[in-house]
Amino acid sequence: MHKVYIGGVGPGAKDYLAPVAKKIIEESDCLIAGKRHMEQFADKDKEKIYFKSGNFDEIFSYVKKNKARKKIAVLVSGD
Image 1 (cartoon, helix red, strand yellow):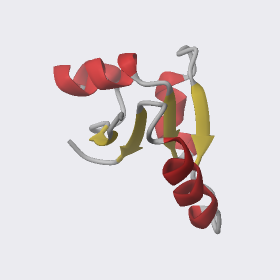
Image 2 (cartoon, helix red, strand yellow):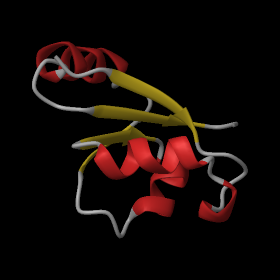
Image 3 (cartoon, one colour):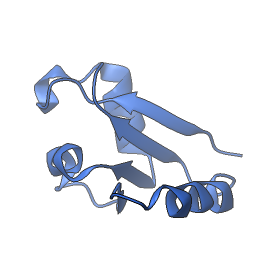
Image 4 (spheres, helix red, strand yellow):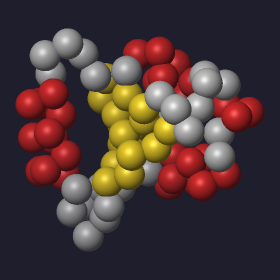
C-alpha cells in the first residue's frame, strides 16, 4: 500500500524545495494542488488534480479509491 504525502512547496520556487519534498514529488504518480502551486510542476509527466472551490469531496474520494495503488502527493503552501 502506498502512502499519501502532504508536502509543503515553500515560497513558490523549486530552488527552495526541501530535498525530501523533491524526492516525493519525483516518485509520485499523482500530484494534487492548487493552480498556483501546480505551475511549478507543469513539466512533470504526472497525473495532476487541481484543488478548486467545492471539489474537496471529489478529491477525498479519489484519494480513498487510489491510495492503495498510487503514490499521491498533496502539495500545499509552506515548508
